[in-house]
Length: 228
Image 1: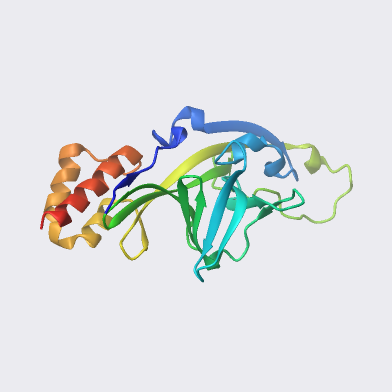
Image 2: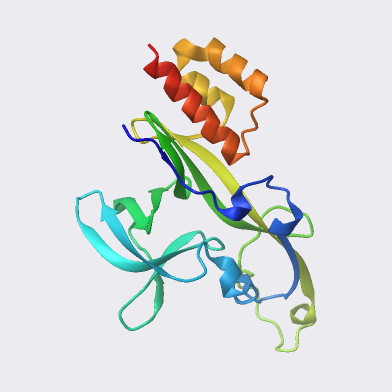
């Protein structure tokens, strides 16, 4: 089997806490965050690109595609120029945009393939997490509130929001099941090699939030099985 390594996305290659991956902004109450973030910062690519959608039924469809990190949706441009999100995502098998491949899982979202070796695939779920004053994730837009006067004081206030680009890594096994990229996942997939894997992690100081280290990890595990 041919081993495949995909060029890492620039802002993927580093710690999730890097400052350049965080943006602070003030948002008026009731203002949709989608309208505050520049379009170029919302998407995986700088522009929509030709791609192909593969369905589990075996059907395919060509489209001009881009992945929106803010709403975590795969979007396309229809014939009249409207930007729409792909519906019926459970019917998807694989999406290809250029050389990049994306899978979809309802419990995770879209996952971009970073590296493939026999038996294992490294993938990343990319998103922009929105938090308010250090609290947990909030909705992109304020929920509908009770009726107030048009000059409501609340409407004049602003929220301090932090937008953080985050990368959550997963390992896909030979049965196309995705697992969190953590040491127990490798123990579970290769129980007969648990000791060797544990030693490798300790000796190489593997960090499970680093795509380069994870690529080395899946390569090592694949070689273990090939050496049998």
